[in-house]
Figure (cartoon, rainbow, N blue to C red):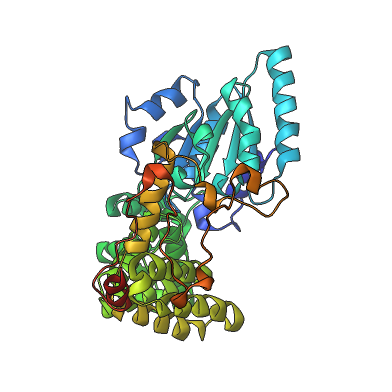
Length: 431
């Protein structure tokens, strides 16, 4: 029995979660995603004619990525295999590919390989897939909540089509819940639950576009109604079930990148209040504190720089401290570092300097290292002119002596231009 056959059996088991039991079995039952599954749309047509190319299903949790893979498994004439990137390794991939090659050679049957959470595959694992996707030995379907343009190797991504799934609309979630309330075979139809539109709208709002969350809340509400021995689902009942409002922050989706972006821009813009607000949103959503700390360190170097060199010291100390003490106390350390960086004078001069230098190295003929700066520690080096006429700065008063350091072709080039803020003001005066 394969994994999807097992999943179908679970859906028919009334002890399984409602979200599992109500998983759509075909495109007709599928809610939302009209932009990609509507009549005549690319994915709908490819599924209908069973001629799917390699694709990446990208979208927030609860939008139907795994469900789509299961629908394809149920409708395709190709052999279907599933791997979970969390537990699968290179050996598993090679074994599946070897079987796919044999199946194609002997039976002319294609193999569709579905990899859930493909972003968790490292570069080596993704590279193993590349030649088999390229030669058509396997049709790859990858599902991810992470932006594939950040997490999937560009070589592999160029051979796949990215299909973006959006958070479900309130109307889609309400339709999904109504089906569950009326379905006597897989849903809650036997309970005879009455409901108000306001209650379903509230669940849709709390779910934040996640169908799985909506059905989980609905199931919990049904259990609450049974314990209260009442039949109508109301807003008051929901308040008992839900408690605190679920945060609409997805650590793996676009909301994640939007909030992190706002967090960094608030520190850069010296708005400590906004920076602390976005920090709080990440903490409440369960963001990895090490991820937050890394963003703070980057901001300290990129946006504060030498205007206040102490900012990087504070940021690095915070990064070490949060790993040492953990949550919940780590929130205090992070807040201190965020506020320090937000209120510090700003300069991106170091960031601009290194990027311009890298650009020149990549795009220009920068010329050789000047002879007097070359390595002269080995026998015969001076005969080549290496180190000759080098002026050792510590032999001179003030440890500074003017001499050429840049290659001949770059003499006069200025990369580092200190700003007039904080400590860089003093640096600027000495130049």
